[in-house]
Structures are given as C-alpha cells and as structure tokens.
Length: 186
Image (cartoon, rainbow, N blue to C red; front, side):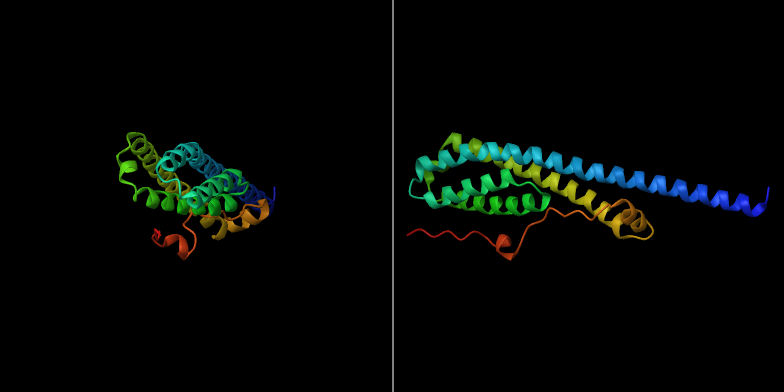
C-alpha cells in the first residue's frame, strides 16, 4: 500500500471521529439545556399554582386593590401560556414584577401580615423563589457552555454543520424590572 493512501485514510478516520465526538458533545449539552429548563419549569408551575391562593388571601384584606390583582392574574396567565423560551423569560420577568407589587400592597395591611394562612403562602412562595433562582443559575451555566461551544473555533464549525444555535439566558429584563416597586396609597 502506498504511504500517501494510509495517511489519507488515517486523516479521514481522525476527522470522522472528531465530527462524531463533537456532535455527540453538542447533543449532550443541548439535552442538558433542555433538562435544566424543564427543571426550572417545574418550579415555575408550582409558583403558578400558589399564586391564586396568595391573591385570594390578600383580596380578603385589600379589596380596593383590584388593579394589582388583575395585573398579577394576567401576568400569571401570560407566563403559563408562553410557548417559546424567549416568551417564557419575558413573561416570567413580568410576573415577578407584579408579585412584588402584590407584596407591597400586602405590607400596608397589618392584619394580613398577622394572618397565618398568608404567612404560610408567603413562606412557600419565598422557598419556591429560591428554588427558581437556583434553577436559573444552573440553566444559565449550561446555556453559557452551549453558547461558548457554538461560538468557539473549531466547535462552531460543527454547530453550523448540524444546526446548533445559541440559547437565550434566563435573566432579568430591562431597567424598569430592576427598580424597586413604588407603592402609593390615595
């Protein structure tokens, strides 16, 4: 056999193995991104289930705050019906903002602050928010790995060949969502 032929066959085998291993690595990370988002979604679903109970408890004490309750309910509905990751992220940020408003309203009612049912719901939500935050951190770490692979050479060649794309981070939205809630009572 000719030495050149052996070298060519060796290079083809090496490139083929590299393609297979690189693609498999992308598949592994893509599945981790999906798993991380699904885990976070479970916690978000628990929060969705808790919110109506929380709203009803606050309603019993703060009946004239109907605008806040409407906003919370609408934000919850929008977050639950989101179909894409980008839409889910945007709607979750809006829901978090309306929940801050709900708790700001609740702070103005001392009897509500003493209600054990409300305190229990508030504690459950606080625990869920911590779990959601941890899930977001894990999701964002996996997304960072995926995005680095998609953008780095030579793995970006594999990404473009097999259609792997950058994934969105789950982060707080614009400046208005970073501000403290302003509460005004007339």
